[in-house]
Image 1: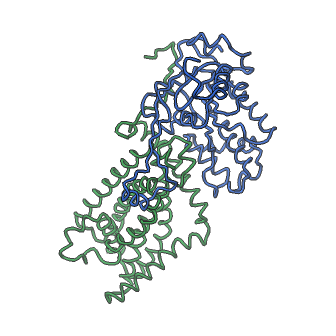
Image 2: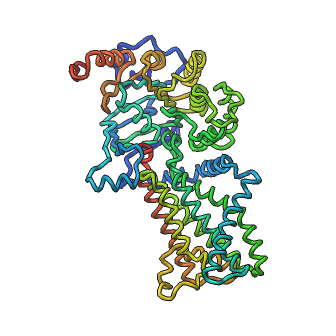
Image 3: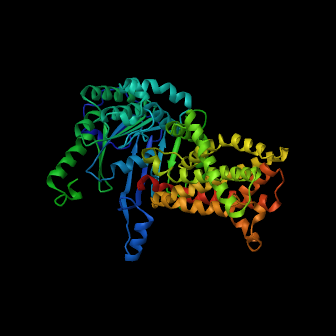
Length: 284
Length: 283
């Protein structure tokens, strides 16, 4: 709550009971941890499942084009000060994952500027592990090295990661032998053990069974004490409400609302019930 | 801006801005690239591990496969040109092994980005590391064949001289050239997934156009001047002339070889980097 009041006094008014965890607060004069400034993202992609020379030549003969331009985000701006956990809500295809990928630096913006202060650990929709032939440990090491950690740092952490994910001896078996639960637990475990300053989590709380979920939530609470900011994308509005103290709602690439989780969720659910057509911006 | 009393807020600042002319900013890009070279090394290492090439039979196959091919080509050329002898076999083996290094760099490089799937979609790192890792893999598959080449070289009564060390320069050119080519086809493969199916045909033709099955001086009179247009003519020709015959290749070979290596590296990397942003949405 403290975190938001400086820049936007109105958001504190309907504030919830407040986070139950120790939390960092911005020092005086500290710039926002993450600053998204008028960001638009357009990308071109193909609607072909497997693009090939062959189909390109066939299409050329017919004068068709298979490339489609996607306006994933349009003029989105918001700041996230230190100590915030930001929930991102919106319907499928709203641009939530694109926004996360832009903040993680995977997809640079087409327009605007994103400033990030600190080391990011991202648990994006697809999780870790890209090579099923390699063991969990090898995948973890590769992911860590790609993220810029040193070899010692990564190897030291691999143990903690395996332990937290409760995958035991499977850590040294090829990932193709993993169950989907093990896979998700490992992915979650990797992202929270990278000592992130900023944690991005995209739809990952479905990981594992009830007991792991509890453990994951506890770990995220713990992380908020050491991390500067957390971003959570979830369709579970309950998770957003319980884990976040700030929220944005995105619809079709536009930022609809930046307010407390309660208000965003209320507006979003109302929007979903009433339907898009009956809803105008004046209602906000 | 930051003086003693205020902490440096921008110490860990990362800025993501639109690419200029499709290219990321070179400074941060290449700094990251150098920082994360251990990743490329580990990526290549674990790929080699997964392919079981570290086992005895795996290593044996790495040698046996090009060696058998060399025998096939030796017989073919011996029948067609009535040329033979251990020395000529040594020439074919030396050229073919190094040609397979380039060819493996290109074909492994082609699938390096499309095969990187989740890693590319979820993590921010200079993607150029992927084709570089592919070339490293190809190089480590080439290494075990070197002793075999030297053995055949000795059996063929080949000379041993310090000039042979100059071959390392040509090998270096081949590595640089390989990285450039790998980057180029890796980016192309993202847009046209059948690139890797066409590659073997081009690579096979390229093999015949390069001085592997024939000596560099065998080039027909009317094409002699055009030979420098084939990058592998200078590089593989230089490699076999130095390591096999122990002679210093003509200056054109040095110049053409290094020029081609640099051109391939710069053009391949620039093309790759200009398409890099797309990879995250095209895979």
